[in-house]
Length: 177
Image (cartoon, rainbow, N blue to C red; front, side, top):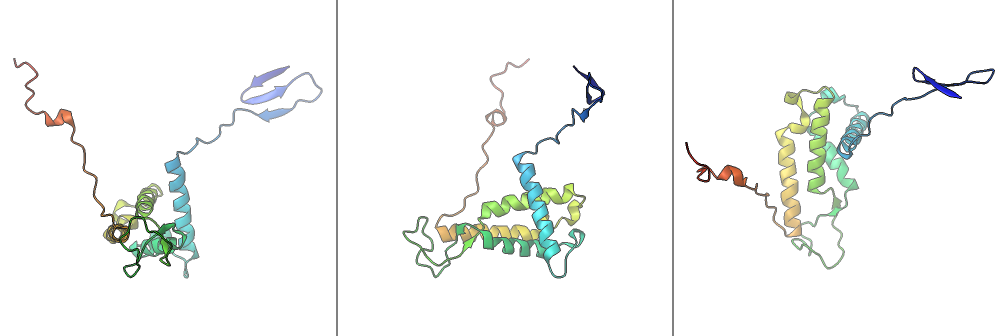
């Protein structure tokens, strides 16, 4: 016979009681975004610690972030054709070439967004956030534009859809009193 007493399970009916902790909650499962943000933050921290000399997160600046993005390029999976390549500007090249693989702009943009949030969640001030620095935005814009040219597909910013309820300002369908 088992009875529950203040979160412990007690097995009765034997000469010795066995207790086990019951009801210990698992930490809440993180969303995919939160998991990625945590993993990215840890990776960036390791990158800074592995630099010579190591850099404390409090001493990190936009140059360290740019160096980190350059470091990540070696793990990229997006073929970016150089201007001298015969496939430059072709969205679907017919064959292989020697151009390097790089990180895709969208991946870098999402990464910076997650690291920007993680920096502030870990005690960093929005005013000193190196991921929010103008140099990072310029770098991302240059990566986006160069990758679009290399693929022959110009980047077009998505237009915001107009809210049909907001656009109807005359309210003529409502009676006036």
